[in-house]
Structures are given as C-alpha cells and as structure tokens.
Amino acid sequence: MPLIDDSVDAAVATMVLHHATDPAAMLREMARVVRPGGTVAICDEDSHPYEWMGEEHHDVWLGFSEEQVHESFTAAGLAAPRGARRQRNVRSTTSVEVATIDIFAAHARVADERLG
Image (cartoon, rainbow, N blue to C red; front, top):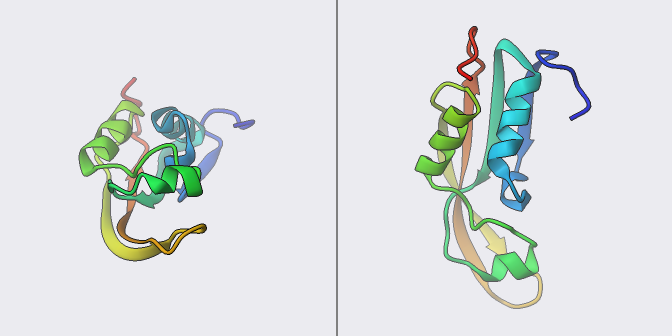
C-alpha cells in the first residue's frame, strides 16, 4: 500500500483475502501501516468444499480455517484474532448450485512493541 509505516489507526479487508494470491502478505502489509494500538480487521469465508467458486467467483482460496487465520495474524505480528462466525448463502452465477458458507469477522490490535 502506498502508505508509510504506522500511519493509520485501522486497516479493514472485507471479503477480499480469498481472492489474494498471498493473504498472509496482505495481513502483514495491513499491520505495517497501522499504528501500535490500532486495529487490523478482516471479514471473509470460512473453509468450504465448493470448488466451483474458484471458477465462477474467481476465488483463489476456498475460505480459511480458524487455525489459518490465527497463524496469519501471528505471523503479521498481531495479537491472536478475536471475532465471530455467521452463515450466508452464495449462489453460483452460471448454474443453479447454492452453497451455504460460514463467514467470519476477526480483528486484533497491533502490539505496542512489534513482534517481528
């Protein structure tokens, strides 16, 4: 991002990480620009088996497990994420398939002293 280190109070990514080739790098970059004590927050899909979403929705990842989210937050120098999960329906754009997928919201504060 074209922002200097520690320059914003929060960074938010909503339903984009599953489209990223390197979601962990995205989280690291978000953490880089957030001031110590600020917040990094994401909302995305939980792990799911619907491979057709890669083709029809251009998803690179079939969601993320709680473990993957935790590991990515930790690797970015963030505290363990807190959040919640909810359910939503996703309809295929070229067929009649419907998937029920949990989504999650997770957030963590940037440590006063960076871990990395």
